Figure 1 (cartoon, one colour):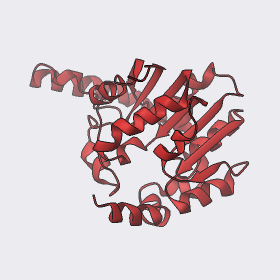
Figure 2: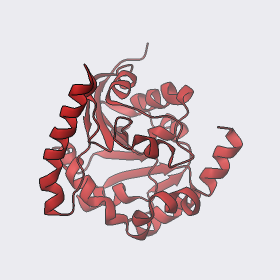
Figure 3: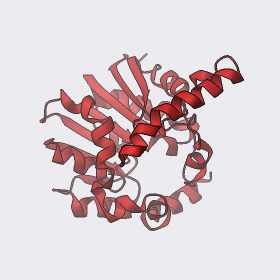
Figure 4: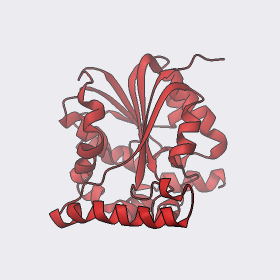
Length: 246
């Protein structure tokens, strides 16, 4: 994608792509909180509420609002969309989101943060910038810091739609490729599939039998197919113990 096209898309991201693909969150920033409850509560449960956290690509500020609601106080955010920055700051408890490029932002905060979060952000990075992006995260973390990355899962049943629903998406990841990337900068990385916040009892009851049935179908197809993580819309990585610079 050309630099000029990316610039124009992000300048108008809120009214263009943002409200088109994530309209519910812009109507109500708490709309995604059930997802955070289901997938992030355990990660943040043992973390002190006074640690320093930054979200790269904070978008409408939904995750930052959830973290504020959980009691976290030292929060920052950065986003390349002027509209999203203004929208996020309009509903957060303080003006904590800045306009800017994530990589450049992190370079100014060496060994500063306890937690860096990127929710639906890394897939917007050009492939040739991934090394620099994750390296900047590693350098901005304290020695015992955590990097949390949540990206669309390219093993999902309708991953093709997820990959191309947003014109600013540059790359897709599976468990294997995300773990491989993070392994270049961190000693320890876990990557799991996200859990949906299913709204009805019938959906919750039917999900497990459907997964077992479809996994058996993949098993019949051949070796390795049964390990495809088709049931999770996104994958969540937690990386820690940053490797020293070479």
